[in-house]
Amino acid sequence: MVLAMGRGLSDSWMTHRGALAGLASLAAGCSAQGDLAAGEQGRVTRVLDGDVLALETGLRVRLAEIEAPAPGYGERVGEPWAEEARGVLAAAAVGRQAELWYGGLSRDSYERALAHVIARDEVGGEVWLNGMLVRQGAARVRTYPDNARRARRLLALEVEAREAKRGLWAEAHWRVRELDDLEDAPNFAIVEGEVASAGAMAGDGEAWLSAGGIRFDVGERLGSGDVEIVVGRRVRVRGRIDRRDGEPKIRVTHWAQVEVA
Image (tube, rainbow, N blue to C red; front, side, top):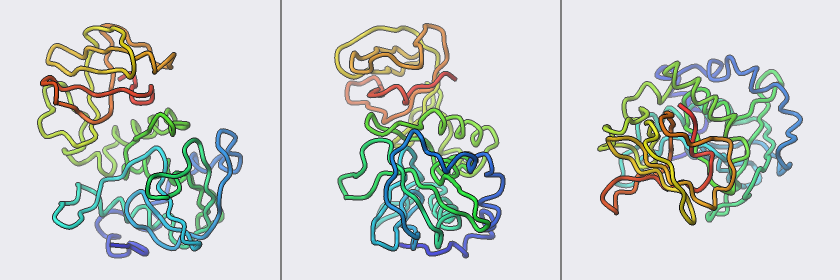
């Protein structure tokens, strides 16, 4: 389903103008994207879901470093707040001129651009759509080893949205999970707990999630990072929960998956 302007959702989530309210801090400095490489430009003609839009050129763009709730498809039930998230993006983007900026891998397996998108709002200001969606609670931060340039900025906006219970954060489904609350966690989950032990291993890292705490093995591929794993420290780890070895764990491929709680 493609949503053009999201008018039907205005009563249930926010007004068109309200979606952009309070975003001055995101617009500041947007014209100088010194940490990113300039890409294509074009007018946004449609929104496919909460984190994918299309330009008038036909290029489809997947907003980098974030993930909105997935809509329903076929027999798959949509995730909570999927339709509202699509409406937030539509109100902020459709009909506006957009600039694409790249901070890593530029195309995914579907040939969609993986980009940070700057859109001009109705008064000529610039809005960083990726950050706006996270700050409004319409998306969570999800990065990859080859696309995590603005992870820490986005994580700070996510904390702000979560503490204010904006958007999806008002839904119990999306809560940050404690170590004894993993049973019905989303496919991509955020888990918080105290580090019980810290070790090292070859390859990627692993965060083992047990009632006694997080056993964190730092993988050699991670290299030096901006988070220090210390026994007794509370951390948040995000990723897919893997139960194939019995005890649940999250594979840690890059440091942006980890933050101090």
